[in-house]
Amino acid sequence: MAESLTQKDLLDLFVCELTEFVIVLADPQGTFISWNPGVQEQFGYSAEEFIGQPLDVLIPVPDRLRGDARLELKTAAATGRCSDTRWLVKKGGQRIFVEGITVGLRDKAGELAGFGKVLRDISERKSTDENLRALARALDQSIVIVRQFDGTVEHWTTGCEKFYGYSPHDAVGQICHVLLKTKFPAPLEDIQQRLLKFGSWSGELEHRRKDGTTVFVSTHWLLLTDSEDEPVSVVETQTDITGRLMIQEELENVNERLKSMAFELERSNEELEEFARIASHDLSAPITSARWLVDLLATRHQEKLDADALKIVKQIGQGLARMADLVEGILAHARVGKGAISSLQTANSEEALVAAMANLSREIETSGATIKNGRLPNVQMQPQALSQLFQNLLSNAIKYRRADTSPQIEVSAESDGTKVLFRMRDNGSGIEPEWLERIFQPLQRRSSPDIAGSGLGLATCRKIVGRVGGKIWAESEVGRGSTFLFTLPAPPETETGHRYAAAQEREPDAQ
Ligand code: ADP
Image (tube, rainbow, N blue to C red; front, side):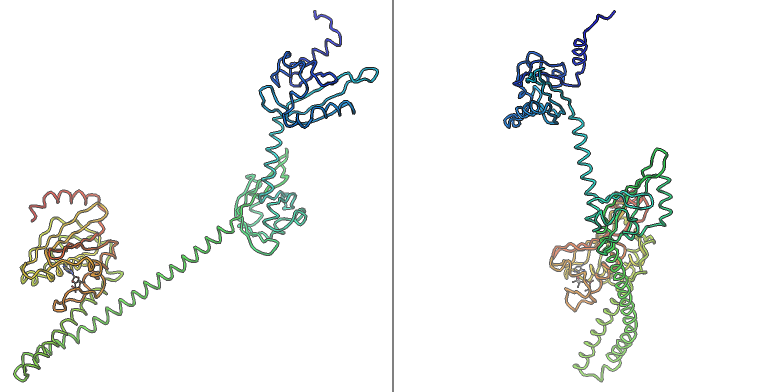
């Protein structure tokens, strides 16, 4: 059976149990004389440490110096009570945010007998409140509209005011789609249907500001519903994408302009090539007949001409020969047109080299040239174009030989599976470093005019290689010879590389 307790005993028990509250008594000077276990639990002081301490012990030093404790007691003594929410310090110096009340206690005669103080830790609530306030501040700076389902604005943030120019006074109560002259990416009814079905909708909108300018936003609509699932309001969060769209638009414009310029350039290039092709073709016939007539003059009417006249006829013949070379060069260069090289065809490189050598058989024979080659992998291009490439390079290697040496030419190639690198090495005159790049430009001749040529052979080679996405360049040592290197696309056939690797091993036999 429970022992019988007095009312005071019960009150003491109640105070001791209430450890989530700190309940203390102080004498009229503010010295602690009694405490409940809440003091130990929340401030870390034991009874011995706490009793006899002044109220100051719980107050942070700066507030203590300001006399906060005295003021609190004075107010409680004068008015009967003093409530406060404030920072206090625990035994270890850690801060705790409390809400509390100090009560002045008087005896029957009305004399101040002491103080009672009750405190409660509200640090957690304070931090939640602070977080909420920070969130509200951040939201207020964002472009957020809280509105009813029909668009009637309920809340208009500072961010909205800055962005659209309308104050909350202008906007609240207005239909926001009307106010902002919204242009939707789809009919509003469809968007609202989706919002009701999925609870949210995202898209891009065009809005008109108060000053009449147009802005673009990426928007997210969130539907808030009540407990019966009825729509209550819509929260619209906008992100300004005007700058992004303008840059995008500008880029699209530039792109369009570039495309039409490229088209124009290609068209005028094609026209130019066509013109060169027709002009050189039409020039060939009169040049051929003029050469024939000059030949006739020099042979049939030789006796009627004196030595001077014969010399002039010979010079005319040479001039006509150079002109024929040039016309032939222009024609060959112009023929390397857009459609001339189909990269869908596969060329057998060895066959293309043989064809080139056959076309140059006279030059090879008269110069005593030897031409060696290893196994050459197939490439992806038109065979005739590859043959022309070999022919131009071989013809140069023979033409620009050293006076005392017969031409020795070696052709080799290696494939990495996607492209084939060819090398054509000769033992000719060599090329000075400053000419290594220039020789690929049209009409750039570094040799004497006595050697026949148009100055277009290497330019044509570069055009052919360029058409299939390859590169051509030269390395040379003056007096020892030159190497012309070029890359061409390998056919889309995985075994090409393997086949060539095997061929490399057999190369000595091939020579
Ligand atoms: P062309 O042979 O008609 O002059 P090319 O465009 O074929 O025109 O060559 C340009 C110049 O490059 C030539 O005039 C010649 O001086 C130089 N060249 C080309 N190939 C060689 C080579 N294998 N060895 C030395 N010089 C060369």
